[in-house]
Image 1: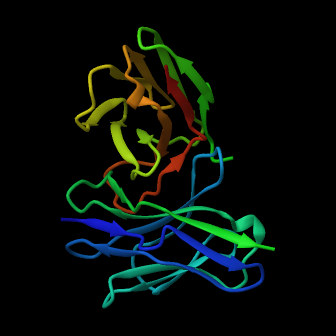
Image 2 (image 1 turned 90 degrees about the vertical axis):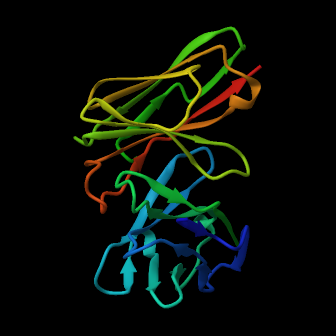
Length: 114
Length: 115
């Protein structure tokens, strides 16, 4: 079965430190992977996607993600965290059986302390 | 802003009421979606429309009735809801449905409380 796992319910990091939010996936074939962020009382905002090509994908607000096929991972990273990055982050993979469906992870809450 | 608006932002309704949620996208997209987001649960895809035709009805109870009069507007009509239907309802749009690379753009959601 196709799935996405975000193993951490919450990640805590100090402002200015690097952050990583983990995501692993399970799909048949080549995955199409996405990261979204949700701020309080808001909908999801698209951050970045991996389709093909360079394994390091750059996105909005200084975020990047690294695709690792051998580890079936797509971790979200940022070199220097900001307090304003505190939000809920979702990893998603395209359903290979249905092109319009996204399979979302359960979300990881990122808390950046001053 | 993402170019997808939803009204109302908050809605409280009794189990016998009838109400509608509205979504409008200003991105020129051809596909629109309804999702349900409940606490401690992954996002649930409810309905998908492509060029105003429904392409997905993900085993959603009939008390939820979608309507897509054109590619820019999407409604979710609600009637005789249950308290467990209380959730954040998110609308999204994408350029199309056939391309696996299309990202979805989400509205801010309607926070629904059923009393």
